[in-house]
Length: 120
Image (cartoon, rainbow, N blue to C red; front, side):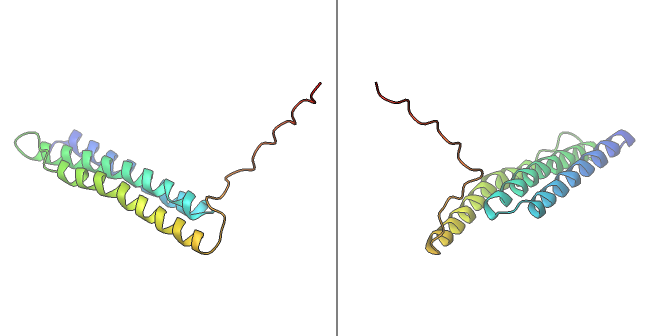
């Protein structure tokens, strides 16, 4: 493998690690389960795509030609991750409704509408 290919793979893996760190920070900082679902789901999916790209670069530079067998992993991940996230969200919503909580919770207070003008 060439030195340039190694640098590209290393940079992509570091970028992927930064995305996972951002997902972890989002999971730690956000206050609600429903808000916490978004940061890890989006950032870790992006990190998985970056690792897939790094794997394609690595195996293509190491082998004889373009290596696309890694795409099978990301295709399966891209299909199953949103389904898993949706099932978790629905289960949490069901549990909150069974507990009698008003769901979905408001993210910010609603804006007060101005009163209608008096009829003349």
